[in-house]
Amino acid sequence: MTQPGTSRPDGDDLPYDEREEDYQEFEEYDEVQKPKARPFYKRKKYWIFCAILTVIVVAVAVPLALFVILPKVAQVILDNSGMSFKSIQITNPTNTSLVMDMNGDLTNTGPFSATIKFPEPIEVYYKDVLLGSMTLPDTKASGGKGSLLATQSFKINDPEAFGSFSADM
Image (cartoon, rainbow, N blue to C red; front, side, top):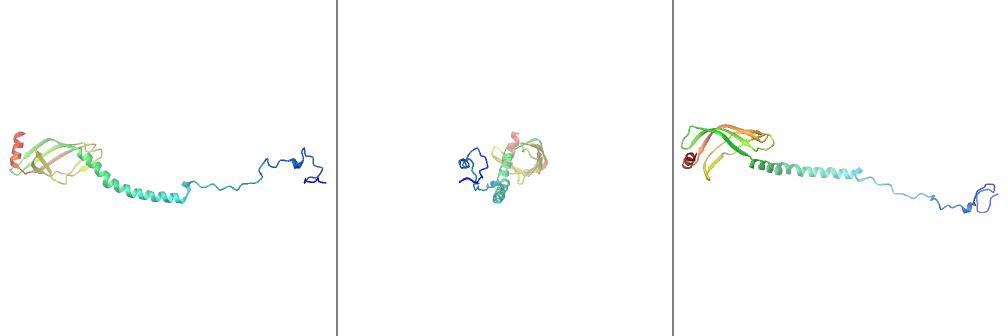
């Protein structure tokens, strides 16, 4: 037989009355929890955005580096370089030209190996007066230095200024 308000038969021995049992001590229901969101770096949209951004950055950075930065670096290296001659022998002199056999050094040419080209004639000045011009052949440089060995024709532009230069030498 069961007592009123209980679901146990009389024969069950409980140290307390079932009605006194504290059901509030433990929560017996499950709360609905939101599923944890995946981290942003595991989402497909994130990687698509990264791929598009990478393409844009590369499309801007590579031409910028090739056409703006590298030429400026090369120009700075060229501006700081020097050319000096150990010896120059002059042969076949005339009033308008002469042949020069040159042995020279190139200095501060930069850290990279390079072929130095002289696309335009080299103009030679003395006391702010153009003496003449000559073309120079391509030469190689590496490790910040190079050498120039050439036999070239020198075209005299101002014979009087060249005579003054020769007298001072």
